[in-house]
Image (tube, rainbow, N blue to C red):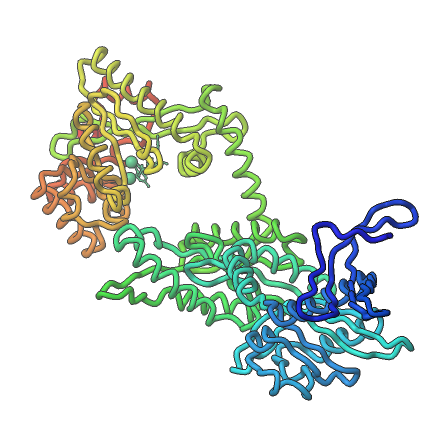
Length: 617
Ligand code: C2E
Ligand code: CA
Ligand code: CA
């Protein structure tokens, strides 16, 4: 007897025959034991006046598995989250599952008999669908992402896979489509892509996307031979707006500025924000130089218009634009951009609110700058830096109680270099900190020497760039004045107040340098501990001829005195200016009229002989 029934008894109830299924184990001819399903039929048969039991067992394992699979398939079809759709050879829908309805909005009755084109979004070109059919016909399957239209009209993205079921003779029987909604995922991907490629404040392409587009345009231009223009746009005085009106207003200005720039170029041009107040405009197919110039002009004009920053605040800026051309100026994206940057820089130094083209001489200058920056690093150690002193005289007596320390670089090949040519490089490269510390030490030591040698108290003015001020640790230095520009006082005023206070605590005094060229608010100065106001050279230059300069200078002196500040006139070059300043009540003056900045030995001889201009007259 082959079949064993573990733990099972066959029950006959009232009936005389019964059928049931049981698990049973069986030993197959190769002696392995396996579990099978059997159908047991038992029948009580009256036979010869006796009751006989007739038993039969049939292996139904295969049938059971097939039935289970069908049930499972049906259940998957009904309950799956994936939409399923079956179409016939003519692509008419014959069956859809409930998930289809929830994903597409169409009930089975609405869908059956129609073709899947009812779902088309219009987002894909004809070629998309023909490629899909090509794949289905050739390989029997297709899968990919597709945009479809919900019954409500809304578009959604789905991941779709279609398989063809063939008849035995190879003709098409069914197309079975499975799809799931990936709209959310697509949106997230879109968002991530946007965040990686666009500036969140202005919505413009960011530096990354700009570089990508620039590379692509250069590739295109290589093929087409059409030149590209690249505009580098930097806002002038944006920092001032940001510092005085706050970042929120600065942001509004940037948004409006990007709108204005966009309106100056063609739809197909790229305007990007590289960061801060730097923008670029990429103008492909710019064969005509007049056209480029016109665009640059327009951008400059647009950005010069006042910016309405809400709550009655108005921002005034301008723009400096650098222009460079592919392929004339550079062959690769990075060089092209750096040339545009240099051209912009040239526009700035030429006076801002203008554009400048990149030229080879500019390139030379840039290289020069780099060389100087590198040489500057070792200049202090090699003893190439020296300090010259310019006397500051008392206007009423001509006496010298003060001097300004002005840095000079004695370059082995280039001779004496003035600070205007290397201080900005020192600031950019960070060497300014080391240099600044040295200037302060030297100045303090010189002042001490002069007191010891000549019994004279000479207070030395030392220039500080705003950058330096940030990490400035005051040391004990009497007879030192620190010159700062008023720009430093804007913005982070609490920190600056504390710094200025610390300077005073250490016996130093404070001058506002170049007064009148920047923000120039005397009432603003009131909040800070300041001792001197240096009236900028630009007021003094035409003082004799220009009546408005006279009025302004007089007003500055008057107001300064009301605030208990002493005034120093800068750049006094002739006796007429001297007399006017004396008449206006200005306290002190410096300039070529008295003496230029001179080496220490020469300054000492001025001290010894007392030969300031006053006595020479
Ligand atoms: P500044 O502080 O405005 O210095 C005055 C400049 O005017 C000096 O130029 C001086 O030589 C020049 N000057 C003086 N009298 C006259 C005059 O009568 N007519 C004319 N036309 N110019 C006159 P310099 O020495 O070339 O310095 C330029 C700038 O470099 C300075 O401007 C200052 O901002 C900066 N600087 C100089 N030394 C240092 C330093 O040690 N550290 C820092 N951070 N900056 C410095
Ligand atoms: Ca100065
Ligand atoms: Ca000055």
